[in-house]
Image 1 (tube, helix red, strand yellow):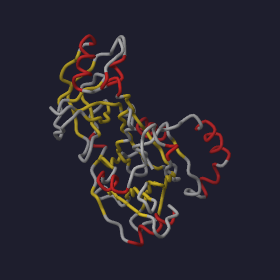
Image 2: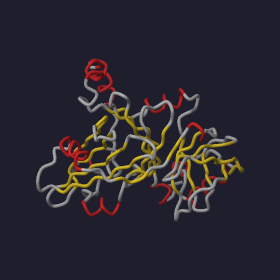
Image 3: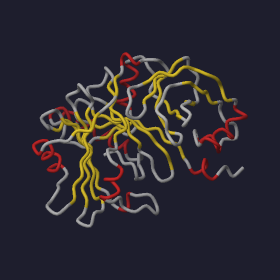
Length: 304
């Protein structure tokens, strides 16, 4: 499952890539037999490339509704929470000499707070839902709404649909269980986010499942959760905390070059803010396309 409270590790994926080549036949024959992960998002990036688009870039929406990012374009398509992708038009530029002050004031593009020579920021006009603070979004450098659909509803699965999930999670009597499911209107596929807790209520395992309308699992990613996986000083998430947090999906987005919808999710950590797209390939391999910014400098200021 996409972890919103854990450290992420990518150093061992070169070894996994070699292993995957050796067992490619097994992947085709048994798409759910392996827990393969594409954590550099190559599968998702290639899907946008086939649409003659660059992969999405990181941007920020302020409470005022204005959007800022590091590149200039006449129009943008915005991937954000709970709404279909919306277009933005270029407005003006924030010059490099003004960027640090803008970053510190608005808590956006925080990596630039530590740069000796910041890059200019480009400000766009867009109609966006109001928010209390700046939020990350992903943007494409073109207006492509006609090729992209978004939006989802929370749905409740029946026992026949949830039983395969809990079997895959190796759930046992006495353990607390929590599951959220998101489905795009008009789409037959859904994403379920399952969490398994100890009797005490501490999170011990989490999984993301792609299912068809019958409950058949088409792709899954399951991770055990332990204190060694967490950031320094972080406690194990609890059942009560996850209930209060609600469905982890921000949006479901469909593009014509992918077999299934992508989940837009907040995958922030204690020290950093992150947003990502997540999906499965036709053979059940998971793919993460993630954009991260380090927030500490933005909060505490640069040492310069």
